[in-house]
Image 1 (cartoon, one colour):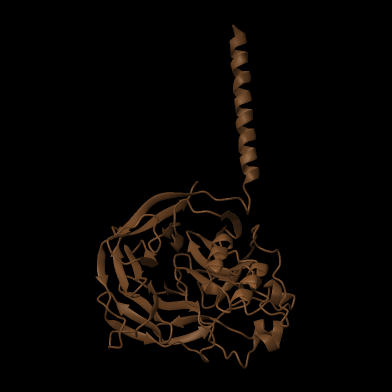
Image 2 (tube, helix red, strand yellow):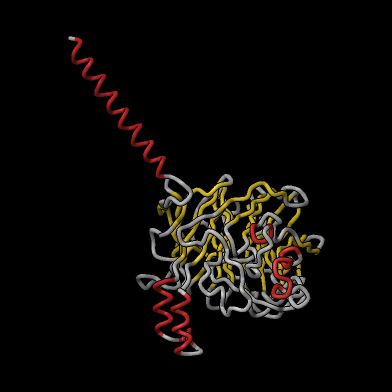
Length: 397
């Protein structure tokens, strides 16, 4: 009578042992370069004919701020995809910002912010009335960067006051502080990250190249490497990412100044372990280096993005064919073959995994503090349609 009981116990032990082994093996597979699985959890459908991109979303407000890719006009949209208001601001009138809006972000339940690359930042209410204009504080116009699916600033509220944190590569005089002449000393002088006090209408420069950033610490010159910045409006954390190298710096910004709390070493099979030093005598030294091009708040963590590049040997052949090599069909073919987007996910001060492929067609358009990743294929849909779709993705548990 006892035999069946013994046999059952042995079988149960065997099953538990196999389960433990399987779990252990699964844990071994997890690591900083393990592929993360994303799943589509929902979508936002907006019935507008023109292709749209998403500049902002705040679940606490129930608003999305979208941008028309052709006219660059901003649209306020609710959680169901209904257009609440299309803001008529791309003009030179009292409630305009000029003809070219480069990005739009939400501030709070009464205000939002528009950016014009040339004139600076403009604060509006939700009726489209301009409340305040904040000119960019520049030393000149030395370089211009425009992203299709990313804004370079974040408005946020701290202790009841409104601020804008962002990137301004023209904040210093590139002739007086010359990267080519100064070499690694450049990193201690150049400042491109700003914090704008909206009420006081004053701007201060903050951390740009941390002293512990490897090229600066070892006095190696790796190019201008202007950092990207992201601000978590919920936790008051700021992330700083020099575009060259493999370090993400995370700061506590609850107080008056950011305090470094984590430095995360980033790694990916398509990234070199070390940023190569610039040889200023070599033309186009950076052609095939995978610069970081994206940094976003993603839940309680951060999403870091880069593109692989066309190999320099291939680029050399293309340039030999034409000075306007970028118009050649061979260039487009090479770009499609080699230039691929990859993402690194950072959470709790460490790299959690990588995203090498999206489960839906499109590009990463936005990520929010709730951990939702928005993917948009509106500019190049697989099937032609007369409406816009933003796929909502989450990391699969």
